[in-house]
Each structure stands twice: as structure tokens, then as C-alpha cells.
Image (cartoon, rainbow, N blue to C red; front, side, top):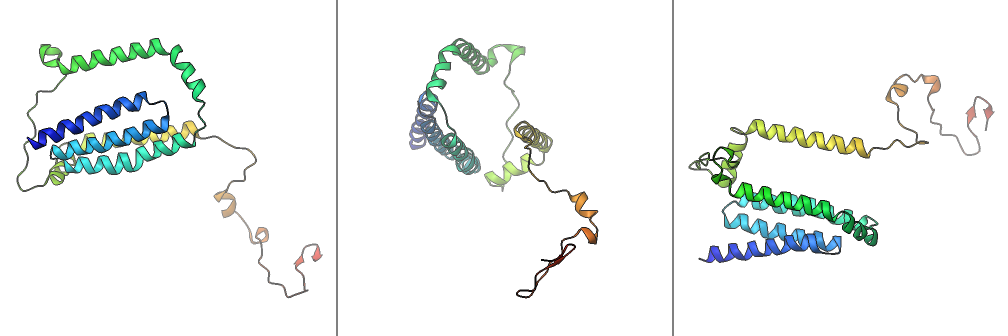
Length: 210
């Protein structure tokens, strides 16, 4: 009974936080509401007995992703008046996308009524292995039965990272860059000699003593 009460309390806070994320006028406040939603979602995982997922949600999403969002939003010079002006112009497209998402969610929720068009798998849940904790069982399952999918997901993330770097990379002129090949072809005559002249002695160069 207590677990059910805690579950519904956390779920209500998650839903309310999610609504505030998209309805807050200040992007910084939206990120703060998002962090609150992450914390309560981690609480839901704890109630469900998935402590590993709860810790990952707090460490990765709250400790890295949400904080990164917060710093990026605070550092960007956003023109809120111009941003709000585009809302009315893009409202029809946003409504269309929203209705499409609602229809998809309804189809997924009621997929069991559509026979061959069912989108939800009816596969039996994986039986818990005796003698293993939640984290150990998840690791064994992830790196044995689903190791191929895990590697494919890593390649997709790597591709996305490379694409982001390529899209944001800009070549700047007037910047001296290191050339390893030119440094390897350097001769002793082209090298810079380190000198320690005495006081008042000067440094000998090709043009004489300076």
C-alpha cells in the first residue's frame, strides 16, 4: 500500500514537471523542471526495484546531460521576443505533429486489439537468474544475449558524434597549425639553437654578434 502511494506521488510529480518543462517561459526554468522530472523518475525506478537504472538516470542524465543543457541555455544569447514570435507562425505544423504523436501513442497502447498489426511484442519476459543482483543480471543479459544490439547502438552514437563535429567544425584563416611531417623533415641547420650568453656578450648569428 505504501509503495503504491509513493509510486503515484512520484508519477504525479513527473507528469507535472514534464508539463512545466514545455510550458515554462524561461528556458533555464525548463531545464530545472527537467532535472526535477529526472529525479522523480529515478524514484520510480527505485520503487520498481531497478536501482541500477535509477542511479544511471541520476548520474548520467542529471549529473551530465541536464547540467550541460543548463550551462548551454545560460550561455546562449537568446532573443525571447523573436523566439515567441515564431510560435504563432509554426503553430499549425506543431499541432499536426502533436496530433500525429497522440495517434501513434494511442495505437501503441491499444496494439493488442489490431491482430497482425500489433506493435507490442508478446515475447515472454526474461526470467531472473538466481543468485544475481539486479545490476549483475542486467549486465549478463546486456553483454550476452543483446551484445550485438549494444554494439550497434554504440556505433550509432559514434556516428552522431562524428557528424556533430563535422557540422560544427569551421576552418579559420590566419591560424598557424602544427605540421608533424614538416617537423620530421627538419635538418640541424633549420633548428633553433638554445644559447646561454654571458652578461653583455650578446648572441652570435649569421649576421654577426647582436
